[in-house]
Length: 281
Image (cartoon, rainbow, N blue to C red):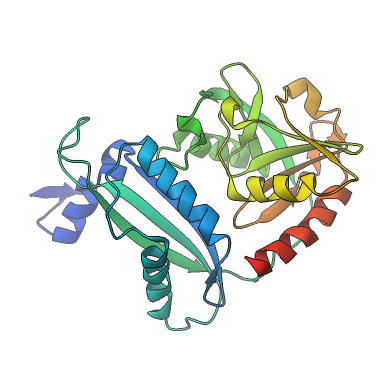
């Protein structure tokens, strides 16, 4: 028997959701995917990141969890929609099966797939006002676990609320050493002249797929040098550009941080190359 908002219920669906270990303990990982015309963008990278995350969290990976199987499950979910031929944002969540407390009863997993429609198949420029501020109430812990796309994102949630309450479009998160790690929903890139920096994974930033793809793109361009290097709050205002990356937005330019205003020339150039790479994936 479950008391849900004052109502006693024995609904199997509600009970399953409450017993879900991702809900109870944050014992899960997820991937957020773009699906364009029935094709999952950068699927191989997402799949191998998911498998690596499951191994790190000591989840038992089912024998049938092949790239082909999970891809088919995602596309099957899309085909069941009223209009399966549009573009979708898909969330694939894997969590340990219900049972146990901090110690799970077993290491086997469940998975579920949800989706919402995307407005546009390409990564578009959004160079309107996009201001950020540091979130200093709580800190990301540097290390491997922070680099996973886990279902435990309370600091990101609190920072997002702080941004909304203070009329910012996003917040930048710090680790325990007061180094800038990432934004609430994206990796961070810093540009000065022909030099581009992004925090290393060891600082606690998400091991982002678009971060990885942009690093590959930038390293092939003779006009830029890229370093995975720590970024201090002091160095933010020295940048010509700051931009954010994730799998849904692609590249989001930051227009301002405190009194500093930024350009978006490099971000616009890289966005075109990212779109071209996404079409080929």
